[in-house]
Image (tube, rainbow, N blue to C red):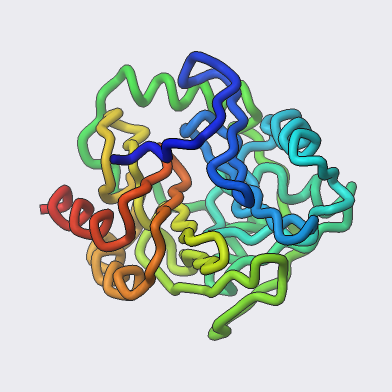
Length: 257
């Protein structure tokens, strides 16, 4: 089952803005289209991925519903440097002084210094692709602010930010792709190392994300993810997965053939 049962939904349509609570400590915005996660650790917040610039209103609203504000945000941790994961990062740093963390191999991409090759498309259905493009365009996805001030990391095990996320290296989608495992909330945040809903076909369930630069590398990175023990697998696109890491990895390998 891919849907976390206790999630709170505030709109009826998949492609409208949505804010939701996945657990007492994990909140999500993004309507399962472009996901941003907020982890509350004793009143201090870590944001996992910064989505699209136009999701700012959703972010501020959800912080308020949590009884928090921008002043409580201590860090943004990026799973990788793609523009649909960095959209609010520059504003968070500029307006609230929030440090932005990213693996050193994706720093140039996150800063907007290099452009990702548009490879790894695979099958495409016009309807799902069109809906994704419209959703992104309406939320500033065509003009992502550059994020020049970053905190980069390499071979470290844990980040010293709320939640103490453990870094799982997962190169493949991009060279610097990582997952963040937070044992205290029984969740691993995987970015685009795994998707539960393809933005190109609309197909649901764990599988490879489109636009993966190195599909073989992404497949090999599943070995590291498989060693993680967590109930929730939270992707950058698609619904939260609630049946554990092992089953998500098994479904991915099956979908990839």
